[in-house]
Length: 472
Image: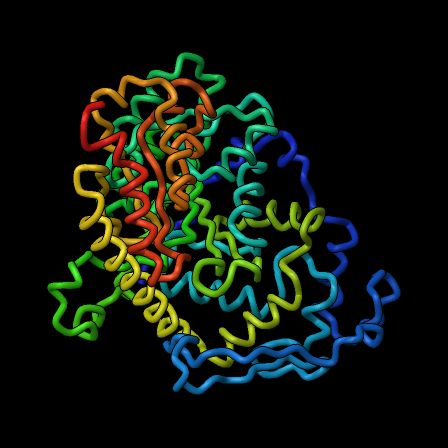
C-alpha cells in the first residue's frame, strides 16, 4: 500500500503571535518524566495526588444504543478510581493532575482512533489535540492565523458565537452567499478572485458543512469537493466546524406514510454511512476540523478535539498550555472510561444511531406539524441533519414594504407565547437596516418537548397571520 503524502506547509500564513508561540518551558520537562519512569523529579511544581480528596468518580450510564427514557433498559455503572489504572485508562489522579495541553493519553488515543476510523485523513502527519468544545477550538484556530485588521470568510448567515468571538479581535467578516447546500463555491471563488488588495486577502474560510447553524443546510460530497477546490486555488485554510456531523438523519418521510417506525429508522447513517467530511478529502492539510461531544453526549462536559497537521496541533497545544490547560479532568475521565471500556467503538456507534433516531423522529414530527399549520406563511428546506429549520416568512405585500416589520413579528410571537430566533442575529453584517427586516427565523426542534410542538407551531401561525396571508 503506498504511503500517504506529507501535508503542505502553510505556516507562512500564521499570525505573528503564532510564529512566536512556543512550548511552555515547564511543560516541556514532562517528556523526560514520561520517558524514564525511574526518574525522581524535583522539578515539577505539581500538587501531590495524596492531597486530592477524590477517591473515585462515577456515573450510571445507559447501555449503548438504549435511550435513557427507556425505563425497562438496564443501566451500567462506571467509575474511575485513584491509583487504580486499568489496561486502557489511567487512574483518577492522572486525570486530575496538570496536563501538557494535549489531553490525557487515553482520551486523545480514543478520539485519534475514532478519527482514523471515520475520516481516514489522506496525509501522514495528521494529529489531534484536545479542546474544551468547538467554541474554544474555533478561538484557537482563529488565533493561529489572524490578528486585528484581517478578514475572515463566512456564510451569509452564520453562528453568532463565531461572530462575537472575532469582532472584539478587530477581525472583519466577508459573507458569501448560500443556497440549500450552504456556501456557494462560485461565490467564494468570486470573492477571492476580485479581492482588490492581495496583501490583505483572506487566508481563512469558516463553515459548518453539516446541518449549518442557522440554516440547517448540509453540503453534498460534490459540494464539499467544489469548496475544497476553491480553497486550493486561493490557498485558503478551511475551519470545518462540525458539531452536528453525527446528527445526520436521512431523508424526511411524512409520519402518515410510515407503517412501521422500526423499518423507517433502521437505515440511519450511524458512523459507516455518513457524508464524508472535508477532512476526509483534504490532501494538503488545509482543513482544521473541530469535533465535539457536546451534541452527542452532553455540552456540559466541555470535551472536544481538533484534527490538523501536527505542526498546527502543536501550536494549539502550546496555546492550551497558557489557557485552558486541557478539558476538566472529571470530564475526560468519564468520557475516557465510557469510550475505551464501557462502550468501545462499537458501543459508541450504537449510541450515535440511537441519538440519530431520536432527532430524526423529532425532525419528522416537527416538519409534519409545520407543513400542516404554516402553509402560505413560511417556506423552508427540510433538513437532513441537525436540529434546525430555517423559515423564510412569506410576508404579504403591505407587510413587506413596512420598515421594522420583523421587529413587529418578534413582538407578535412573544405576545403569542412562542419564541424563535430572528434571522438578523445570524448576520455577519450586524444589526444594520440591510438585514433587520430580512424575513428569516430559526426554529429548533431539538429541545422543546414533543408534546409542545403542536402548541408552539399553532401559536406561531397565529403570530404570523397578520403579516402573511392577506393584504392589510
